[in-house]
Image 1 (cartoon, rainbow, N blue to C red):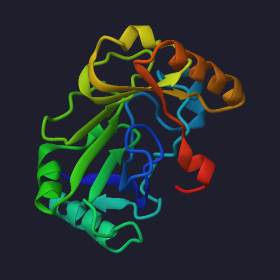
Image 2 (cartoon, rainbow, N blue to C red; image 1 turned 60 degrees about the vertical axis):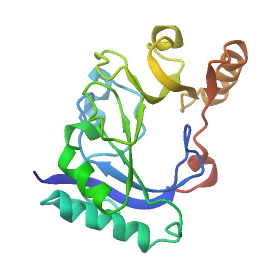
Image 3 (cartoon, rainbow, N blue to C red; image 1 turned 180 degrees about the vertical axis):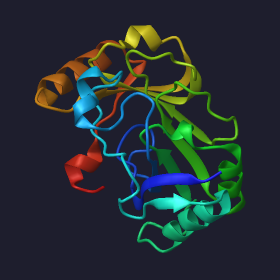
Length: 213
């Protein structure tokens, strides 16, 4: 299988449980809930995405012809970057929707090179059990297939409410204020909800605050 990556870059995880952790982000091109084109946003299942996942023209992006080629690229990115010190090599597969392309062969190739594998997914496709860290972010107008994992991260407020997913089999539950014109108001509402419902923890997009990718 070949893989289409919009971008690959070293950074710090900006959201959720691993906030502040050094990581290589590998963003797959494509999504099953939005084409990525603005002309289609109004009719998409997910309309609030703030990520460019179209094409393979981003930093480190391209088409990779085998899991070994991509895994080699990822470990070199870790080893050659300022974040790649003596810590556990850590790759976060994201998108778009990474489960359209991530497969067991690529996961295995990453493990063989010492990479801990995390995924950020909308949960509409089942995630292989060999993934080390599963973060699911449910989206409206879609079926949630992956109903268990390590971390559930919900944008707040939107059509999928915390009450709809609070009983799912996740270890950690995060609410993240929806970005945009109402960000300040949404942040206040998220803080208030987390205070009233301690099951949920606040997640902020710290990478945007810090100006890092």
